[in-house]
Image 1 (cartoon, rainbow, N blue to C red):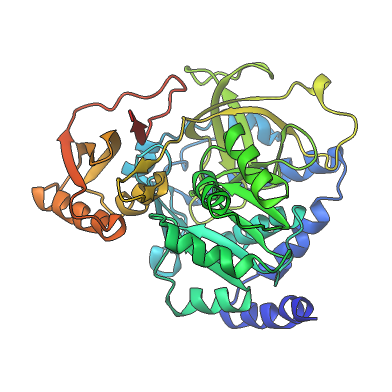
Image 2: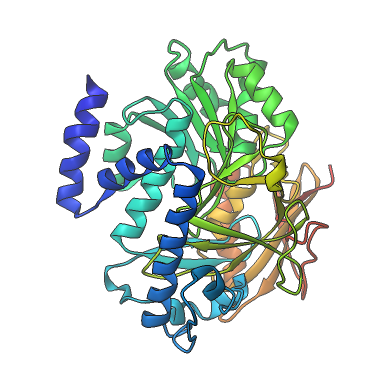
Length: 436
């Protein structure tokens, strides 16, 4: 009963008060799941045409592009590939609206290079509805109790209200302690209705502590997001919580790219995201061939991100290898190659995951890029590349913020200025390198 009241009364009232189309968008995504392959292709082309026209007509960066013909797939090839560096330095040229009424979302992401994007209310509503729609694949419905890990520990009034109505237990993922996780595990032990969602590395830490202290927990499902779900993570989490783990792939810039469900591949959310796989010269590679993942968001109109190079490698599944029996008719990603996400450990038992650092550095524009190296339990070295406005006080501020979460004054944080941070073999910068 509560879930029906929340979805059909409370959420629509909230939409009305905030002028948000969230409920409408959620209904849209539920219908899209039922579409045929041909219908999905047609819808994607329609959305691609709309965003490309909008970008050319309203943004400075794309205003000089002349769209020839009537095929939006051909139009797309006239747009340059957008790098993370270009997003950092020319974000104002991408805007199609004044920032006065837009929401700024900053992220250094798993590449360690900070960037910011802007979204209007429609952009945000579509993104959030698409994410909830994904979670519904895994048994979640609005109002189900959920444990969510994240890097927004200061919830504020609005977020706290959301947590209350949506029955969310929010777990600060900046750093995990046994006490913190045990308190959460105690709350979910007596129910099999909970969904657990969060960064893969955080989920694995939670599973480790649950096993260590012999918690017997039956979850509805576990949803991995934000960093790489290693096979040993997946096995550990599934065995600990007696449920399936589902993997999702997106980015903080507003992309809902792919998600697993009933097959070994990821379904691409094609009405929201157009995926290209390109070589290093930005030429398309054949399906089944590894290349750079380049994405275009199809429902982000305040700041169109067209042909955005994420920094990951991956490949599309060749059409002749599509499983005949599958739940949805979306196109399929065969494989994603990220970097080997690692964790930082302290000698007092604390654990910091990659987002413990990105959640701080995303608000430090004076540092262009960083990498964390750990050789001993007693401390870490943070390599960094300076950006405009840098002073030594920036490093002091970072140390203070990290120590709040580390809670160990003997843990040594040193900094090393470098000119270049070399990427991994996947071509993507690595944030944490553990040499323990």
